[in-house]
Length: 162
Image (cartoon, rainbow, N blue to C red; front, side):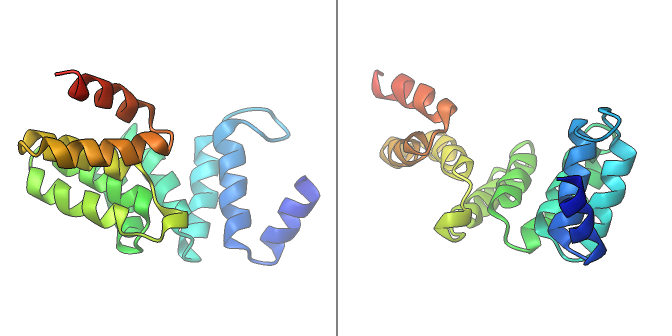
């Protein structure tokens, strides 16, 4: 694996750099140790090459130490129309601005179906429930639930037995 991963990096593969970053982030390397600094290094290179998932990975690293920096990376990925990042940005706004959160959740479910993050449906269901639109909430919970969002299944059971 290392031979081909290093070869992909030599050839300038953004996915290769991102994968190497994941290896260091998860401790899957020759030292069998997590090394977040090396992971960040590889993610930044992948990001410079325009690899959207690298920005999500950088955001995850920074969540532990600097929320503002984490959101910077999530916003870059959201600007690239990544469904997961759009939902993540929506979760950030949910704390202070529900309408802004709604905007990002909606955008997350408008992404191509093969790239869609179904937590957007779950979060929109919660939004609709808070806005007293129980039918729309149930509709979106069913979609999220049928796409393996466990939290949606739980909430759907709670809402439908009221």
